[in-house]
Length: 401
Image 1: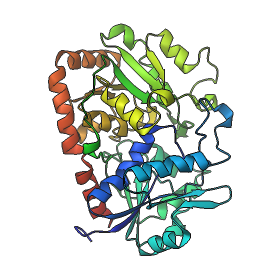
Image 2: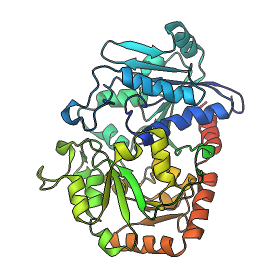
Image 3: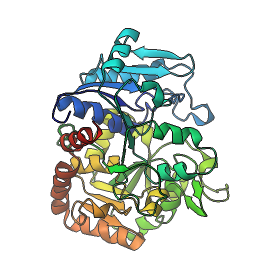
Image 4: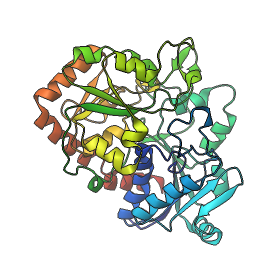
């Protein structure tokens, strides 16, 4: 099938997370990029998860949307904007009820599709889509995925979901590294970026930024090791604003899950308060970059990115590289990011500078400031060479089909 036009179904979580502009871009660039390669592409969202509420600034315990109208409206507007208005389907899990394509059209697409790309493993029951000849699992959360597959209890459903696919890809381009072994062959892949959507002229703020959640889910424990979230790693760099000459800003998600944090379960300050006290600039992520245009403008107006990675990525050394950082690069913005082993597959030094500790992070920021034009030019060049959706998705489809 290589080189021919295929009918491809892509999964994602665009309706699930309507207030996270970066998440929307992550999933959108798959069907958008595949469509631009000439494939007949459809987007499907059937995660079985209750979607996050759209209209509350800080949902807290009431994060789940009881009515999915706003979530469906968000997905519909995104698809319509990019020429995919009649090419999406969303299943609200409580009824269950489908939105988007009519039932007859959805069935026809699924019965005639050549390939399904299960991005982030978002399908609740991939075995229900076995009428499609090839199912490909795209692991965007390496190390955590492989650890979960090795946990002795409570992960049987997850193992069956992964095993239901014909081919497996991972953002962990250096797997196995120090990660637990699995019975699957993990082919390397990375985030596709539709380059024409990034790098628009923008006034530059003199600030290095990032967008993050304090925690995304509970830490995993396996054979005495803990694979935790960003809260663990960022605490190692709390003093960085006092050491670096650069201004550092975090667009922080407001939804908090204290029970997911590492440590003894107690804290004196909320994450935003802690960061602000230590000299970080903190903005509300939903307000600063909660939609497609806001997220892109936030990235493009930044001088560059400074960011830690999830503790599990750092510990696993699997070569994970951030979808968000790829968009900074595509905007011609250098990234100073925590080392996860990606230097084995993506060049570092100019455009991308990796660090392991606070001293290296401060030195990296100073170097980017001193040679900014060189780093900015290298950032865009790296995006073209390593993250261009044409290249990334062409290879993905050829190996999957």
